[in-house]
Image (cartoon, one colour):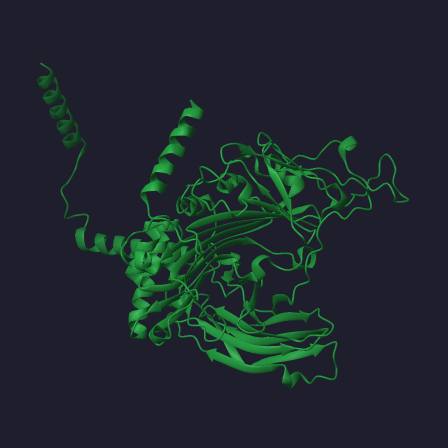
Length: 589
């Protein structure tokens, strides 16, 4: 039965492809690729990339072919020329994993990030289209993007540049808006609509490996959607949509069986101990590093094998690539062709479209063989934290380190802070360590500051800096914390308020740019005692009850003297009781 359904699916896809117009050889309509790269400390980077192209003439004529119609109609209605959306969780460990994938271009801060270029004549029209875009994307991706209001929106000046080819005639009427939700929790509800945008809907190809249990169990993951116009020198302009998922999986944790979701400590005889330690014994174990024990397979890491290839994808692009040295042996399923690249550090695989694909990486053949490809050194290391104490004022400190021994690094540091963090602009300063010959006053070249408006606009800060080689710079400033209204506190006010990650854009040669994000922070604001309203309500209710009861008794009750009231003797009471008893007996009769 399964083979019959597969045959019918392939027949339907073939008919659809035959009935559609042929694609241009220079710009294939759709292609996908998975790149696997082992990292130190028993980690694995899996990068899924899906790219769809559609000509602008077909886009304007609503002839969407592989491009998702649901997203295309939103872009047309909101006048969006270029769109970038990020869903991210975790922290990229640059000290261990090296440089970020895609040079940080597909990375986002914790939570949700969105920036877009909108075509509008005025700022008010741009704000209206921005609200339309965020509300529509909120419903499409099951996220809280509709909460990106004016207090979470900024207009970057130098941090972001268009990735596509926007016509110069339309740049004057194009507005860049940037919004962030650092408190948004990314989950399976966001992954499902992400997969529905793909032509094969996650039923074939590399998308079959995307399981929410594995993706959101990763140490770091980022889902990105980028839509941009691309105009080649000798061809028709196309609208390109690129969907990217990057995740760093812990190999040992990913091997845990599906029927054992709760991690349990292994027995003593299964512990991997470093026997070279002098204190190693039967009852003493020092954990061994996992660098030399990276053996894994696709079914172990992702919980399933890959279901062939997507029949709509470009066959000239290999579906799976693996970045390991040539000395490592790799075993694959039958019918797979392995092609090693000239760099001797990576290889790609030609997969049979209709059969399952399995890949197994065994242990190194010899202890001296290189295990993983050495990660590239990042251009810049960045750490950010709060300073100071108390509930009224605080400070921000960002540690920026240039590891290069010869080349300086120039970058733009951007902060998008909530309105209740009021920066003291005169306290911004940069202090250098490691290079005493460079004065601290020459580190900051340009500062752009847009102050916040209470409950209406966020704080925007962009600083252009240049750090000399082998130097560490401390960028600090002070701020004041505002007191919110009672109704503006969330239910978990004592947890703190999320502060979005800082965006660092490293300027390269020409238009080449590298990006990285710092970690998000929790800002503790002055929080009132929320039990006091309850006490006030109880006290007020008691006072009102006493006052109302006394006043009601005074108004309703009639006070008379004892001698003015009717006399009630014992004979009168007995007569009334006898009459009542007679009536009761009469009723029974």
